[in-house]
Image (cartoon, rainbow, N blue to C red; front, side, top):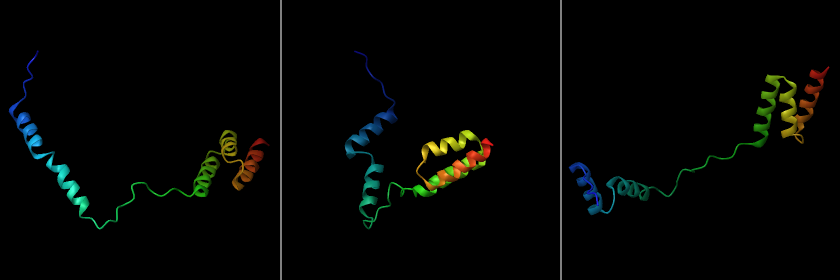
Length: 95
């Protein structure tokens, strides 16, 4: 069996943690969380408006102004009203 040798500072740190019941940092953070007024900041941002995301994707297709970009937009959002505009743009390019 091989004996594990630890530097004195590591041994001291391990003993401190073991004797105190855990790292002091964790304890102070837990205490700080208990002192809040109960209003916690949401951890997940609110969802984006889907219409805005589709409009941004259509704008990106218009900036590229390629058959592939419009076809991709139509494939993803064929039921959206902007798909009609994308089809018109696609026809314009096909001429």
